[in-house]
Image (cartoon, rainbow, N blue to C red; front, side):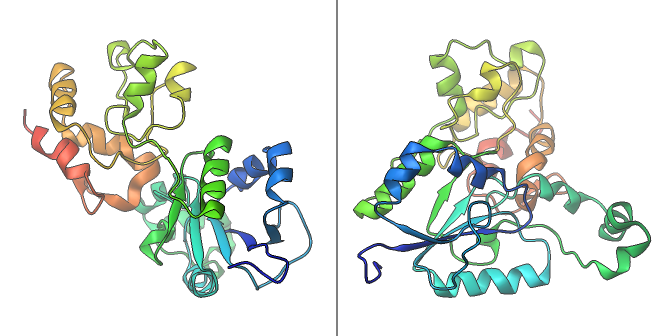
Length: 268
């Protein structure tokens, strides 16, 4: 992986996104300067004019929304030895997923007006719906500490230590009042932690921007839904905000663990 200088070459790439996750990388500031002693960044539109197609590690931000995106992503995957999804738009799909529940022709007309016909689009999707992904840096936006953890772990040849438990754990540690008790539908019981429960801590519900935990506590989720008179449809509608690729017409369609987390509660 290292180049002639002993440093792996790193590229940052963007698809449909606000590029806010790349800006969070730049906010690492002093830590990023330390990383530059171990890597060579060769492609990073937010930070440099220099562009190279020779890289070992690719960080990819954004969801895939056109056929051209698919071909470009496949080219990036073919070049990169390691590909990392950067942020919620890259995985589980981000806010762009919401257009998948609308007529795409009407979406283009709304966005592009009388020039709509020249702008192609396809249902938005996360990057791992197109190519294999090696690692994930989750969130909207990403957490700087997690980005550093993943990057440093890769350089050291070890697996990054990423939380794989629900946001509710972090909420309890921060002594937050449960959003369900405030009349809100919160994804905290099934959403992956690692954000330090930032949304509930500052007064709003969890919307699952980090995707779902791998091993959801099924019984606990059932109890929460039953206690507050909610159905599986209620939860899936909330999950459309970031995970629309995995949720269709009120049914789980492929998100690992989602049907286990909420499927057995329907009708109860």
